[in-house]
Image 1: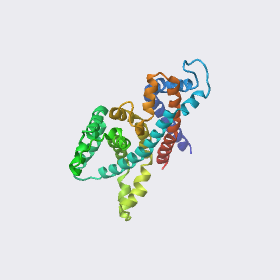
Image 2: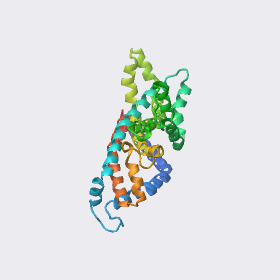
Image 3: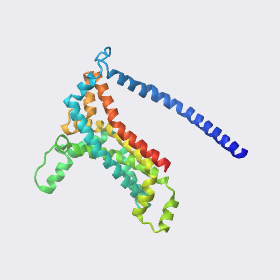
Image 4: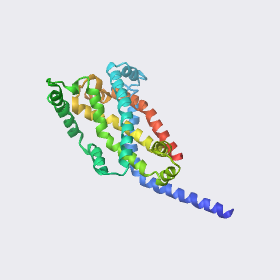
Length: 297
């Protein structure tokens, strides 16, 4: 009994020392996050309740003004549509491609490289390629002319096709990054589980359902959170493709923020930022629940 208690005490001491060591390594990064992200965001929350000069408390007046702004509602709706269309597509397609790439076979390295290559391209170069494809004199219109025999001079970036083009750009840019995350999760699954399942007669669908997906729950949460975070950065592609005033279907919250920044509407930007964080909390909470359930499983 004394030996067991002694072992448990030594184990607790080792765990405490490990936590102290990990905290020492993480302290510089945590201080940077606190200084450059947490404290500025708290100041943003504070400014959302003040007037334009930051002196008088106005309560919920800024929130009512931003919520009643027609441009904000349109940008918020477009941003929500983009999340609903792009994030699930990226989630599922990247998972499917990672399952294909993970299997050994000829051409696997070339296939993996071709998918990861857009991730390392600068956003400006990528947007230039897409503009060459879909501008009025672009390759897509020339290809349509070759098939139909009719001249095509449609500006796809500034028309009804702007939204699917932006979604395709987001998928093309981020699919390789998410695929690498899925591959990291797949490599952590013990191969013995699949061997035992094959001995028991389980096929590929059964292995995917009962082994792969349950073991990837932690990775699912991480990929979901990072996909949502990367979707906020799609403003670069939208701006480089269509400028500051794009088609109304791809006019999103970052466009509105840039216009408010030019007019120095600090209180509006602060209030809209708080709205944006509150709207992203459900995705963050769901991703955290997936990661926690994956660790417990």
